[in-house]
Length: 241
Image 1 (spheres, rainbow, N blue to C red):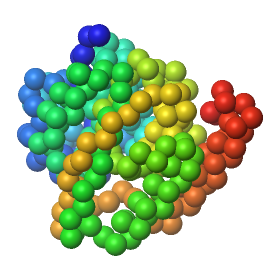
Image 2: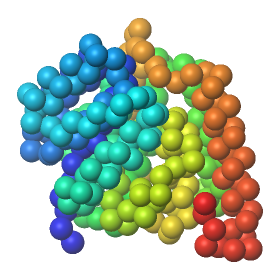
Image 3: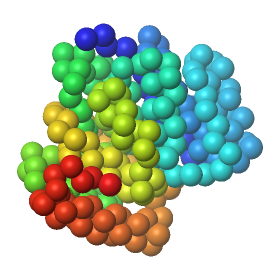
Image 4: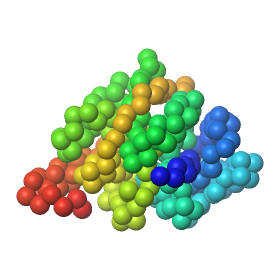
């Protein structure tokens, strides 16, 4: 199977941070940047990044949510005939030195979804750790797969062709909950996975797009929706939307 990967990075209010970290990306891997409705100053930074790094830039007219932006990048990657998309968040929390490891493993396991398994340091907020434990509990409940290690890590390598139908249909919860929804539905489609340990850091004074109230409400509704579908699948396994 041909292995033609690209990097896909949705950006909202992290253009300056991204301008520093993009320098650590491998130069030989094409980059797709999604401007998720940023204000003009941020949009101009992204235009400059795209020009300097010869990247594809998609600008969404308004902020649609992280995972809606991600799907826009996946659709563009499919149109450009890339076989795989490596999702990376733009806020600088990921260890970009792990990119070659993701790509090397993706090349030898082209039909497999590769998932970042975060290793947190002392800088990780206690609320985030607790939230991840809850999210991971529901992930395993909804999929029946206890080997899944993390529901929300934004460092993943997706085999695009295997997921094309799901990508084109879109998500019910396209903001912060989308990482969970996409993973659960990918597992319902029977896609195998492997997990790679990767360090996650929380830079001092880092800006988070996570909205404590709104996004927690969304994730609660998402898990209610997915648990309901999981029960329906006991009687009709083909149901996943």
